[in-house]
Each structure stands twice: as C-alpha cells, then as structure tokens.
Length: 498
Image 1 (cartoon, rainbow, N blue to C red):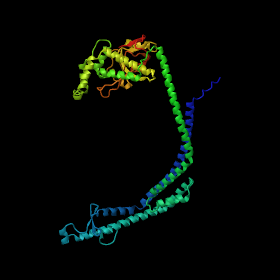
Image 2: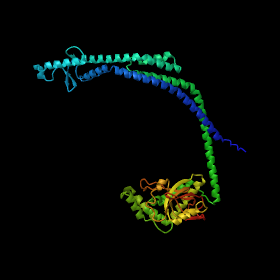
Image 3: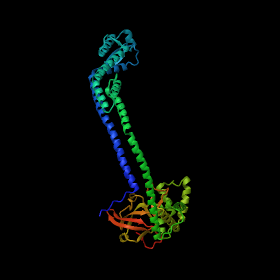
Image 4: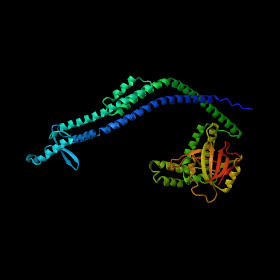
C-alpha cells in the first residue's frame, strides 16, 4: 500500500509559490541582463579596435611629438622673459639651457667680451629648432611650439579619418542589430569624433549613450512583467511573515503548555511574582551584598564556596588587597574610597544565609523564566574530579538520578572561556568538561573584573541536573548536563563533589 504524502501546510505552499516566482523573476532579470551584456561585449570589441588605431597613430607621429615636446621644454625655460626678448642656447653635458641674448655680466656686455660666442649660441638655437635666421625671440619660439602642435594634430587627425569609416560601420551595424536607426547612431558617433585626436575616448562616450538607450528600451519590454512578479513576491512575503509569526507564537505557546505539564508533574510551586519582579529583587540583593565584586576575587570566591559547608567568613582584607594588587594601589583613591568602605562592610557581614537566599532567588527566577518559555542557555565548565566522582557520573548517566552542586558552580558562555582550567595537569583525579543546558544560571559582573575576563554564569545547590551522557575523549571526560525544573529539596539527587 502506497502511503500518500501529507498535504503541504499553508506556509509551505506560500513558500513554494514564492520560490517559483523568485525563480521566474531571476530568469527574466538574467535574460534582460544578457541582452545588455551582449551589446556591451560587441561595443567593447570595437572600443579595443579604436585603442589599437590610437596606438598606431601615436607611434606614426612619434617624430612630430618629439619635436613638440622639445620645443615645449625650451619654452618653459623662458617663462620670465618678455616676448620680444632675443634668445640663445647654452649646452652643457647634453643639457640645453635657454638664456637671454645679453650677457648677465655688465662688464662683458660693455666691453663686448664673448659676443661672437653668444651669436653662435643664438645660431645654435635656431638650428636646433629647425628654423631660419640668425636669432629668434621668445615670441618666435612660441610660434614654433604652435607649429609643432599643428603638425602633431594634422598627423593624428589624418590617422583618425583613415580608420573612422570602418569604426562607424561596425558601430552602426551593432546598433541596427538591436533595433536602432542608422541615421541617429551614425550622426552621434561622427559628432563625437569630430576634431578629436584619439578615437577611443570619443567612441566610449557614444558607446555609453547607446548602451543606456538600449537598457532603457529593454527595461520597457521587461518592466511590466518584472513589476507584476515583484508585487506578487512582496505580497507573498508579507503573508509568509504573518504565518511564520503565528507559527512561532503557536510553538511558543505549545512550549509553555508542555513545560507547565512538566512543572505540575514535578510538583513545582511557582512564585507569584513575574520574572521582571524577581530579577529586580535578585539584582537588589546582589547590590546590597556586593556579591559579584566579592566573588570575582580569588579570596572572596574561596570563602563563599567554603561558607556553604562551614561557618567561614570573607577575609575582607585579602579581598581588598587582591583588588589593589590587580588594578593598582590607587584604585580606591579619591572618589573610590566610598567603594572600598562599602565593599569592606559587605564582605564583613556576608553570611551563609545571604548566599542561600541569593541561590534560592536565582533558582526561583530561573523557574519563572522556564515557565514563560524562555530558551535554555548553553554554558561550559572544566574541572578536576576524583575518580570516584567520575565513576559516579558514569553510573547515573542516562538514569533518573539527578546531580546537584554542593556550592556555587561557575560556568562560561563559551568553551574557550574554560580552556585555562585547570591551570596545571591534575596530580590526582581526572579532568571533566561539562556542557550544560540550563534555565537558572545567574550572570555575574564586577567593576573589578580583570581585563579580558569573560562573563561567568553561576548555578547553585538549588539547581538539579540530569546527566544526559558521560563519555571520554582526548581532553578527558565530557559530561552533558540538562537542568531539570524541580524544587530545591528534590529527593533523588546526589551532590557533585570533588
């Protein structure tokens, strides 16, 4: 018997239809672009021919260009002279220098010393420029430059005019192929190349105008179909987002209902306050006790953990000394003295009852968030445990026995945050890497955090975990824990000890 495929949901049907329309839209867009790119390729080939023509023309009039550049260089050396100034050329080590006909030495000028030499230098300049006469003025040199420019222009224009008919023919043929009239495009290119020494820039300007005109023409052909498709796609997108929001809301409500069943089955009594009120209450208690500031020091952390099993107290002098050692002796200077006094008083009065109250508040807040459908948070921990504890974790993995911390349990938001622990290979016991999915972890942050220190999230004795698996890998053991929504006094639990 053939099992029929289930009918697609309204959301799946919409997504399938949208995918079909997107495919058609992409096809039409690609088809339009191919038309334009095909024309662009043909015009680019003609442009390359223009570049070759320009290169050949420039090479053929190289001697004229050389003369022009020499004359321009000589003229530039006379910028401070009047147009009627007679000139001569002094040569030294292959370099030519244009100077005034008169000697700069008044004595030589009066005595006529070097006059013959200066006349010869003037004649040398005339010969160098290929002109006639015994001497020239700056005005005549300017005319020589103009003549050289005209020679270059004449040669270049002659080369352009020789090749232009073939370029125009290719351009017109390409334009006619895509539906343009010969008269319009031919006149545009002739006008663009008129009195131009180089073909390529002029052709490219005409080419861009033709490409734009063709693109506008093509767009007019495809525009209506593309607009209709785009409107349909946008409409489907709006409806899809509405259905996705409804689906997400339904999934969230189902999650809340499923969790409600679990909470009821586990006999969990939820607090009357909502999560926001519980968070505010916990934040206030943490501020009053300066818990995060104390816990983020090594001395404070050790004392707090010991306070769960004994009547220890926080060594406030060590806490303050550690902060000063880490952040500098002046960290409590001036305006921070009040912080020091408040931290000292809070450390002196912090009790195990305060810690249990904080842990209970943390756990109640977590249960309220769990009941509201908040996502589970994934954190990581790396620690050394005795072989007996490792064996116990193996034994309860996958069973209905739960695991609870004996004290606050620090975890990190990413695996890299646990890489430095333990700092040294353990002499006894084994390394266990925990991957934890939970709902009640408490974020801590202190103004005295060491730079680069990641955020810690704490669990405590009120939390209970199901050991999903316990496996060995190259880095030690990997224990995967999932927090369970139970009351703090759940009977079937063992403590996570060393």
